[in-house]
Amino acid sequence: MARAGATTKARAVIPQLGWNEIRPASVVLVSGAEDVLAERAITMLRDFLRGEDPALEVSDLEADGYRRGELMTLASPSLFGEPRLIRVAGVERASDDFLIDALEYLGQPAESTTLVLRHRSGVRGKKLLDAVRAGTGGGIEIVCAELKRDAEKQDFAAAEFRAASRKISPGALRALVAAFSDDLRELSSACRQLISDAPGDITDGVVAKYYGGRVETNSFAVADAAIAGRHGEALIALRHALDSGADPVPMVAAFAMKVRTMAKVSGVRGGGPQVASSLGLAPWQVDRARRDLAGWDDEGLARAIEALAATDAAVKGAERDPVFALERLVGIISARGRDLR
Image 1 (cartoon, helix red, strand yellow):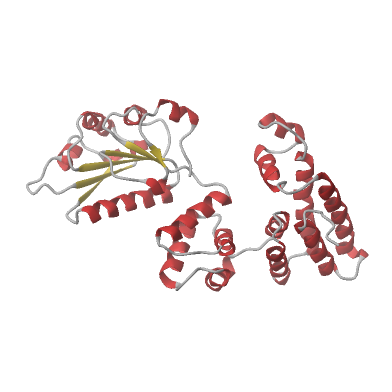
Image 2 (cartoon, rainbow, N blue to C red):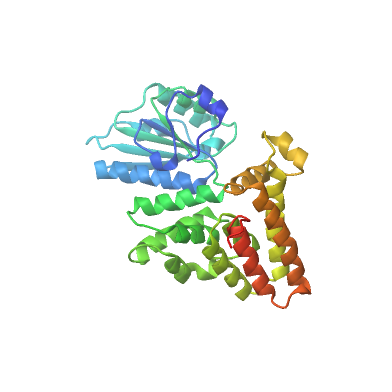
């Protein structure tokens, strides 16, 4: 789960937790640009507090349209002493009035009150954030950094099913993330729909039934499965891609791009932008290639490159059956270039 960067960690003395680790505190700072995670965390906190006391009083404030005294009024004790949850949105756009009141409030938080501060990014409100992170008010921070890698999105989706006590197969999880990889909000909605509508365990077939039209199997998806050694999955993806009209020539090109990047990175030690620059690659490409190289050796890479050259010629007319040539290539790549005869 994402955490704050090194600079924030160095000065923060309060707990910094992931979105699904949220818990009650007098002040809860929800930071980071991933709104879906922030919304989910705040909802989980509300549901927990309401489960503790159904009389929970929930109030919402907009930090940019705030007027002096509103926070103190909402946090003041009521006649019957109901617990309070005060949610403040847009702290990164906060008015001066809000910042003044919020800093004053941190000095003496109200009893039985949970104050949630939602701050996406930027320097506005830095003094308030620094005070919270320094421990003033006895708060915690929930870090909702943007999810960029598929592995992070798979972790998010898996947590959704785990929270609902539902099981999802690894293949179904990968297919679901592939279908909604560009929109975390849609991925979250898809998870909730499956949890609500699909009985039993969530299998590959269930995901295909609900979202088969959204799973855009492409050349790189086939290559990724084969390079990871998932032969059956790669063949299924290959046939699906071909049935959907994919051209064999660019499919071979996708394999070639990934395998050649792996060959470049293989044997190179060190890290950072300098290594990536020396290879003519972006740092993320180096990181990805190193992950892909797990289980490969130099001989396997050499054989894979030879197979790529032969398959490239085959799909361009050197052989009668380009589909067979592609399937043969998938077998060689999935075996990580080893001769299994």
